[in-house]
Length: 244
Image (cartoon, rainbow, N blue to C red; front, top):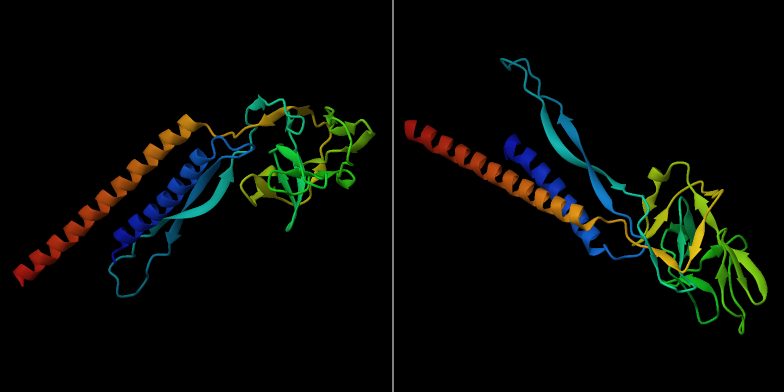
């Protein structure tokens, strides 16, 4: 396969990957605490061929590579729910949850109580407080979450939600639909928690759909260019054969 076709194919692979990311963003426009993803592409230059028999040095070839995913960690809009177990972080910070793979971090504060009274996420993972998972006893009254994360019931103070920050939030890696994993979490200095509200997805639907159309057109343009290149090569071969 000629270099032109390989370059076009590398571009199509990256565009296809970007289409998948955008489609996933749009699908999660209503997912609580979801963070939009974007694709980072980079140029990969192939070393030119070199040989003493070449009349001139070969030109370098640039390919397109899928370098990494970038997460938009900006806050989504806050929506009032009136549910005592819904908690939103107003500002920086991440809730800490205990999963089978260790502690993970989320902005999705849609919590619930398990059958044994443990405060958990909607996926059943325990929500961490400064003293570990919180389990309420039967008969405890309405849960109150203060602005600093202190949890109280009719039995008094029961714990404080664990909220952390990261010096380099860009190093966080996705570990689930709304879960992230990271290293060296630090206690959030001034977390402001709001009970009865939830943070929605930060996906901007109009922007994502516009980008989806743009990437789709780019994919079609590359396909058209590759088809024309293939036609030129076939015509050249036929003409050379006719001359011979």
